[in-house]
Length: 358
Ligand code: ADP
Ligand code: TRP
Image (cartoon, rainbow, N blue to C red; front, side, top):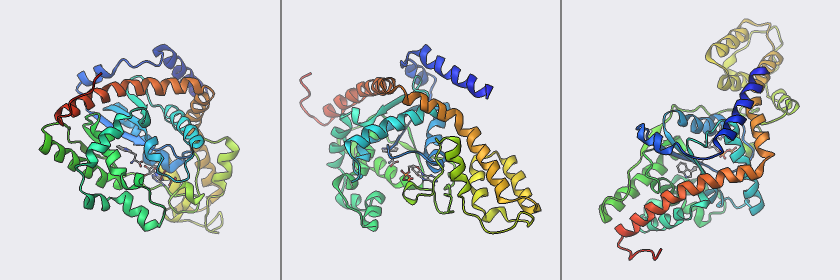
């Protein structure tokens, strides 16, 4: 308790001290840190799967890289259910989530994609060198086709916008999970095509293959997903978490019987959160017998509380101050927009456009 109060106070005074200003980017470059870029779509309250699969890996990059992390709101627009009100709310929730999860906006670039219209300008230019046949083979498009969902041009053009996100800021590396591998390959291909035709314009980004992030199972053992209603939220109150954890589906073995941890949904979720020695301890209790699913659920619940309560408090704190949140996003967006404008001036020159009258 004391620890987390202290941690929170430290965090708040830190934010106050730095006045939410950027001043360290030049320093990071000088230190020879590579620039890594990634985006997250604002799309609903995060669950353990989103945290371990997307949020934590992105936040961890700040240790070793100069991080460009953005809210991919232009990308989120291609979801047919997205309204303007939702977009506004989801974006603030995502920002508060990332800050709650310890993103350091002072040292790194945190911004919204839509605040940089140059992204669309570049996506158009890339579209003019992107072969149509190549685009029809993109996973994002083929998945949408397979699901039989409505396909708008935003879905079709998804890899072009993603390439623009990356090439606009000369990113050195982009973290790619299985689902984004092909999109990064496409980005590299587009960059090379542009460079061959117009001269050296773009840095060709390298993939950063992260250690395979396990797919986090939901309370029913299927992949955890908002659409499957089987989630454990990373931000909840104690009774909410309890309700979610207690509904994890298990078999009907009695408390006394030895159990196989590897086939248990409670253990599968615990494995993602707990330290290796804790996982080992729980596994041996399963095998020994005299240890019920109720016990395992209690341990999991405690682990979730210990892990996420400090983050949830920071998240709550940010949500109470939406004006500060917006300020922070605007500051980050302004910073990267000036880089984007410089880059687009250079691109226009290389493309032989007469130039902008400003
Ligand atoms: P959802 O399925 O809940 O709608 P999204 O498709 O919006 O989640 O995924 C957002 C990010 O979270 C993606 O990077 C995705 O790979 C990651 N992610 C989602 N669910 C899981 C999961 N169960 N395990 C690991 N990563 C996940
Ligand atoms: N495609 C990513 C997703 O759907 C979000 C994204 C958009 C992105 N542009 C990007 C990721 C550029 C990495 C680099 O979650």
